[in-house]
Each structure stands twice: as C-alpha cells, then as structure tokens.
Amino acid sequence: MKKQTKKWRKVALTIIFFFVSVALQVAGLNYFLIPNNIFSVGLNGISQLMSLSANQFFGLHIQTGVFFLLFNIPIGIVGFKMVGGKFTILSFINAVVVSILLIFLPTQAFTTQPLLASLFGGLLVGSSVGLALRYGFSTGGFDIIALIIQKRTGKSIGAFSNVANGIIVLIAGFFIGWQNAMYTLIGIYATGQVIDTLYTGYQKVTALIVTSKGEEVIDVLHRDLIRGITILPSSGAYTKRESTTLMMVLSRFELFEMQEAVHSVDPKAFINLLSTVSVSGEFWDADRQLQMKKSIGPKAVTIDAQLEAEQQLEDQLAQLQENQKDA
Image 1 (tube, rainbow, N blue to C red):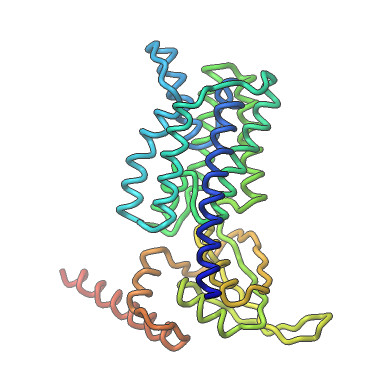
Image 2 (spheres, rainbow, N blue to C red; image 1 turned 90 degrees about the vertical axis):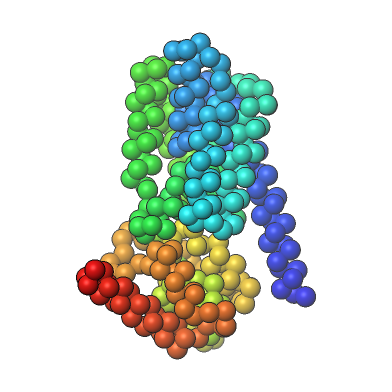
C-alpha cells in the first residue's frame, strides 16, 4: 500500500510539473522574448529565427509555435523509434502542447525594456527546462536529440548545443542588430544558470548516496540501473551510527530514476550530486545497459547475477567480433 501511494504521488507530481513547465516556457517566449525580438536557446531560438525569416523574406507571418511543432514532430518520432521510454514520450507531448499554446495564445510584451525581457525570458525558459528534467522529461528538441546520440555513442551534445546557440546569436546580430544579439546572449546565460541550479547541465554527474540500508539500496539500483557502484563504509560524526556511502557516475537522464529508486527503499537517504569533469574508462551507453538487463532477466538482481551477466555479454561481444573477422 505504501509503495502504491508513492507511485501515485510520483505520477501526480509529474503531471503537475509537466503543466508548470509548459506554462513557464510559453510565458517566457510569448510575453518576454518573442515580442522583443530576443532569441531563446536551442530549437526555440531556431524556430524564432525561422519565423522572422519567413516574415522578412517572404512576407509570411508564421508563428514561432508552428516551426517549433514542425521541428519536434520528426525528432519525436525518431526518438520514440530509437529510444522509446517515458522520457521521450513525455518530452514530445510537452513540445506539442507548448507549440499549440504558442500558436493560439496572443503574443504580448510584459515589458519593452530589452534587458528585463532577456533576463526574465531566460529565467522562465530555464526554469521550464530545469523542472522538466528534474521530474523525468524534457521540453523536447535538443534534449531528445541528446538522448538519441547518447544511446548510440555514449556522448553528449553539449558542444553542439553551444555552437547552435552561438549561430543563433550571430544570425540575430545580422537580422535585428548587435544590441539585440547581446541581449540574446544575456537571456541564454540566464537560461543556463537556472537549468544548472534546478538540475544539471549535459555533463555526467557523480552521486554520493549515504544510507543505512546499503544492501537494499544496491539491489534496487542494480534492478533499475546498470551502473557500477563503489561501496564506501562510513559513519556519522555526530550520531556515530554506521552507514554505507555508495558512489556512482550517471548521465543526467538517469538522475531522476536513481533518486526515485533510492528513496523508495530509504526515504532518509542523503544524496549529494557532484559535477563530473571527465570519465576515464568504460561508461556504458543505453544499448549496453539494455543488453545487460536482458541478460540478467526479470528476477531480482544480485552482485553475482550482474557479474555473470556482464561476463555473458562480454562473451557475446567477443563472439560477434570473431564472426565479423571471419566474414
């Protein structure tokens, strides 16, 4: 009964923050950025550029939401086919809802001061993205692309996102003047700062989990995530109680799942997230994790089961390489 209550609480929170994220993004775009010709980050900014280009070059007044929807439909379909999962589905639905609201809600400037517009617009869009990621989905666009690339290569698109945002600023400078381009930079910076505050950037993170239920937490983490875990014996300086500190490196897309898994076993567990500059060694992508889960099967995961499954996977990969050499 307790687990069922937690499940419904998780669903309710996801629904609530889904709509909060939508409202924040629409408000930031329609009431601050778009009416002041200040561009947002990622596909939002690209959609704004396309809308402005259609108006200046062809005399067509096509709203930003139309382009945002057109970009996200193929990205969502490809993401669902290649990745699937709740994250991709919720992200795609979020993008569709935002697009529809951008199209049908009026664009009205809450302020005509470009500095205020860039700051508040950036803060609202950043809050939207940060809350979405914190509760297991995203605002679509580049985040779905990032998940696809991470699945295929194990790498992020942080550099690609920075280049895309830089191009948006340069084009904004040519289209609407370098003053507005500088305000766009301020908005992009504000967005990034809020995302980092509410969640984390594209980089991997190291989680330090302090718990009094070490074995139970390890079991649930091995069931839900296929990541290496380092066990560090520890004790409280004040209480002198023995505890276990678990250290693991995760991608940002796994943080929500990790936190939910840990707190389902130990609600009092202390989780500290550290920014990881780089990882040396094998950091498994989603494909390798999926193969491991299939090898382990639906039963409860133990350390021995994971080691056995890892060995089976290595044998399968070695056999595949041999077959490719023979061919």
